[in-house]
Image (cartoon, one colour):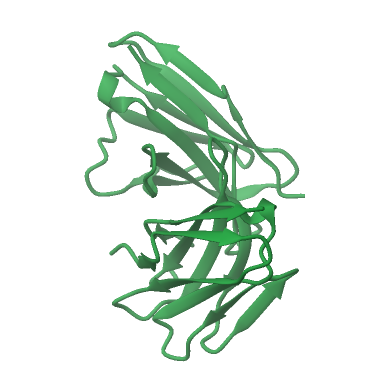
Length: 111
Length: 115
């Protein structure tokens, strides 16, 4: 079952923050976050494996809630390069690393 | 590290012909490769999972006789779209796992247009 991402789209000014949510109706084994720019392949951002886990790289971070049914991606002090579509990929159980992707969140960062 | 390539980047073919797309892991051995299809402004839909030396596992609704997957080695998987039709036009993307780690590394994608 496809995870639900919200919001579907967000427009930011450079330097502003945003949060993207990814929710599942089932307990998740792992959550993966990717960013895709138009016409290109998705680029891996990070993976969360444990309930309560938080990770970050530069000013993009993510959390995985204790019940392991929701993850959030945080864009802090957004840069122009953060523009793109963000997808969460979820693994419901440890079964060959197969992911189901959410519908995506389109992020546009304006100067 | 963890670079995945796809060839070709784009292809235009006539209805009824077959098209082969290659996916290669350039600097690692891929235990598992995945094939996705993505329509404009939509999410990635998993088509099949392939492991080297074994038959691919197709997702529900994906015709295995139409989308032939061959995982000949630990660095190469191919997807052949047989008897392509205009509705098969899409962006096809492969990904690979490295060393059985959970991260998937994506190839640059192949845009298929069937006329």
